[in-house]
Length: 577
Ligand code: IVH
Image 1 (cartoon, rainbow, N blue to C red):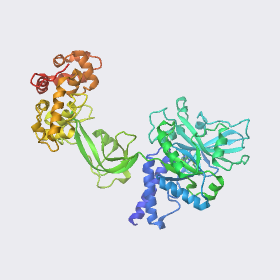
Image 2 (image 1 turned 180 degrees about the vertical axis):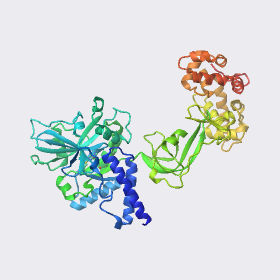
Image 3 (image 1 turned 120 degrees about the vertical axis):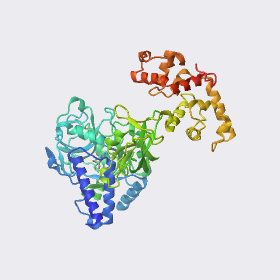
Image 4 (image 1 turned 135 degrees about the vertical axis):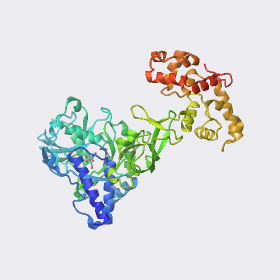
């Protein structure tokens, strides 16, 4: 078998398995993004070898084994999907294609939010809810009536005095997890909605979790006739069937992109998760003419929002040593752009995380960045792993100073034992010491600090206050003017230092800004803190035994004591109040 043939078979098998987990088990193991990527790869391969395309390929049809449904129902007409686009140009192409087919200048499109939930079909017979079915494989779905009738917004009866009720009406829509009622509003929204819907019996707490919007309907008994999708949806409102208030019609693609941008901006404020908009041809006659394939309706398209997830590979793993000696593994990535930001690395946090995610060097991974939050590796794409995968080692020596490393008690942190002899730890301490909430010397930036340390110009905190212009101009990029400014800032910094800022500046493990304030209020001056015992420290409200011990140990250390005493001595002259 040729390589490409084997690959096509492999991906088909995988996608079929994912479809089974998603549509039948309601327990997807891959994100939409991962799924889309695999489909994309399969389409690409099939385009290279059209002779290998078969009607059973997941690019042509969703193959789901529905035997596992406890109680299944045949859909009256198949529940199909539609294609996705990501770019404005693709929308223009879609519009051009439709206008060409119908030889018209403009087409009316009905645009709606694409709701990220579970597709449901509900049948009303003589105005009464008869049953509700999931999409399943598009032809046969699972009967979920018992749970659907618990969703508050779904009417059990659509009887109404004003308008006629069709004797047979099938509505379709999306059941979703109401946002704000739960903490998880990430891409697994759909999974959760599916999970809740599948529970054998919804309890009271579940009932308020789910919402529903109807996005299409079929009046099977033809009492009501509509020519346009939009009008049909508006009519359904009279039956108290929930319709999204954002449904709007446009003819110009410029207006559609405006709607798209607007929905994207509103996204986080909505009570449902949305991953794009759906653009539908409004006229039923035109819809019918365009028709369907085995898998999709040709008259609608999903215009998806930019994904906050991307796939890339891990080139390498480096180790960063922090101020307190904690060693953090960081993955170096092949560059990806997520929502406008170029990303080349992602913290792996600690070695437990590496184990939990089962990450190896050269692995293909999914990186997620939501809003301005730092990028995070959320998953390894295991089926892409091959023989070049390398296990990530836990270093037994500090990568910077070569001191031995050790785990903390609960093994969550790996620590370098080199303390301030480790140039990485010392560099981080100096950065912390001169930062805004500490001594505040803005001119001493990270790069300059690193150079001053590697050139042996400063080797402890006291040295900062002995810096002279001649030392600074030795450093590349520092001229007389800048050197003068920095020396001035150092002198200024000495004049008025809050006791809490000074305590904070020392970088004692566990002593952040808040603890520093507590300590400064209690001790009033630095000398009392220096000689304090653990018992007294623990008595301060807000200070735990661990931090108390850290503080006590810090001032028991001869070297630390010497540094602090020198800083506040007349020789250096920090003015602490
Ligand atoms: S209309 C094309 N409208 O998206 C005719 N579908 O793969 C059928 N979806 O599972 C669907 N929001 O459940 C339509 N406003 C919307 C939608 C929507 C979400 C879901 C639908 C289907 C998937 C398409």
